[in-house]
Image (cartoon, rainbow, N blue to C red; front, side):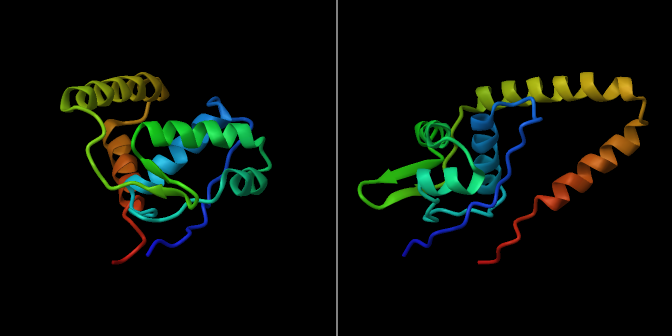
Length: 136
């Protein structure tokens, strides 16, 4: 039986990403880290819009994108739920996106002048914090 999960996310007006992109990224991260699991119900469009004090259209567009990408599934009359886990991108596309992200990261970080071992330690720390907090 599905349970409704509160969607504890924040959006920031000072973020360079549009608000809808922030919602999409936050939901993806919660699913990827196991904070949201298959069958968890998300708040309604209106509910999340009220929680975040946003226009419901912004939330609806973010939810639509997540549904199109296969992260969420819509069940007629009951709402949106986390979809079954599956590989959403081809291996080649995953590799391409990883290469792009690493390239952007290197271009942003190298000019800051930190030693590589410190950067690697910080990255390792961030990955450790992503360990799912839920237990089965």
